[in-house]
Length: 314
Image (tube, rainbow, N blue to C red; front, side, top):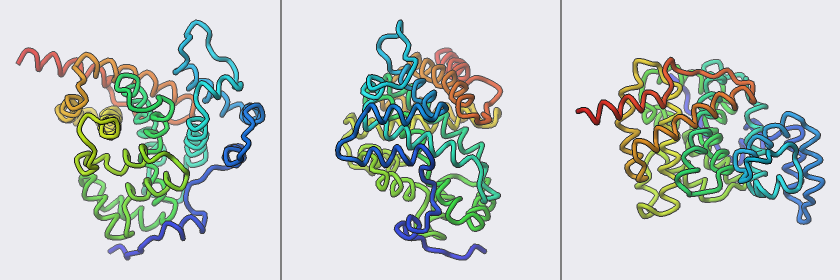
C-alpha cells in the first residue's frame, strides 16, 4: 500500500525538487524578467549555447514565411519572427527536455516520456498550422510541456510515484490520475497547470492542459478559440499515443481520433496530412534532442489512410 503524501505546490517549488531551467536557459529566463529587455544581448546569450541556438533556428525555419531564404542564425529578426513571449516558452521547453532525460524514479520511463512529449509537440504544431488557435511556436511548446506534471511527480516523489506507476501500468489513464489525486492530493494534470502558471505561461495554454481530458468542462463555447485549442491539444495527445503505441492496439484508437477531428471540422485528407507532417517532424526533433524515439512499426499517417479507405468501402 502506498502511503498518502499530500503535496503543496509552494513547498515543492521552495524545495527545488521540480524540473526547472538550468545553465544558459536559466540565464535567459532571468533576462526575460528585465523591464528593458535587450534583444541583441538575448540573441548573443542564445548563440553561446550552439545546441539551443540550433533548435531555435529549426523552429524559426518552420514558421519562416520566406522558405527560399532559410534562417541560419539567431538574430534580433529571428527573435521577432518567433515572438518574444514564444521565445521565452521555447527556451523553457527545450531546457526541460535537455535537463531531465534521466532521474531517480525507477518506474518512470524518461525516454518514453520525452518520445511521447515530442510526438505530441509535433502533432500540436501540425494541427496548429491548420486550425489557427495560437502561434505555431507556442502551441509546439504547449504540446511539449502538456504532460510535464508526470515528470514533476517523478522528480518530487520518485519512490512513491514509481510504485503507483507499477500498480496502474495496465489500467486506463483516468484511473491513474484518480490514484495520483488520492495519494498526492493533486494529479499530474493539476501539477502541469500549476507549473505552467508559475512559469508565466498564458492562461490560454494553462486551460488547454487543464481541460484536455474533458473540453466540455471548460465552459468555453464549441467552436471558440479557447475550446478549439483544448480539442487540438486533445487530438495531439491521441496522435502521439498512436505514434508510440504497440502495433496491435493502434487500429482501435482511430475511431476516437476521427471523432475529435470532426469537432474541429477536419476531414480525412487533412488529418492524414497532419499525421504525415507530425511523423516527419517527430523523427527530426528526436534526432535534434538526442532522444530515442519509440516508433511503432507502421507510420501513423499510413494507418489513418488505410482506415479512411476501409470506411469509404464500408
